[in-house]
Image (cartoon, rainbow, N blue to C red; front, side, top):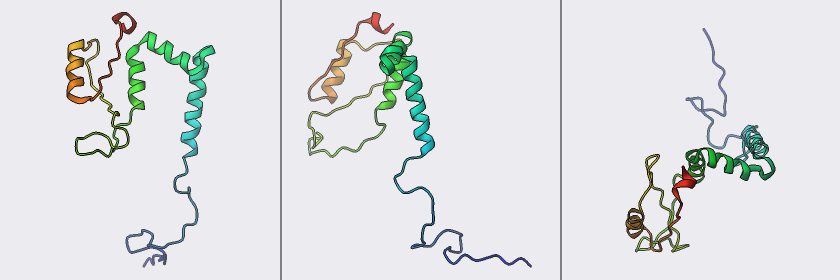
Length: 138
């Protein structure tokens, strides 16, 4: 017959009971050191690849070679989900001019000025149009 050792700080399911004293581990809110080291190494490698201009140079090279890659990097900087308090009209309370629209467009296609204007009318109180010429994107 096997007798299991019972830990007084654990419940029947093996989990710690409320009020159990912590004896180690990473403190709440502290960043994972491995993740920080990897991010630092990536930043240093990117700065080296960018030459004299550092990370900016890397982004310029990537954008010239393949703008889609640069666009995907930028898209990853945009929060995927954000909670914003709004008033009855649906405008953000803290900054009534804050509106972010992310629109997926198939690779190799562009929105016409009329399409951009139609999108702005539906969703933006004050339109902002960022123009580009086809040569800089190709």
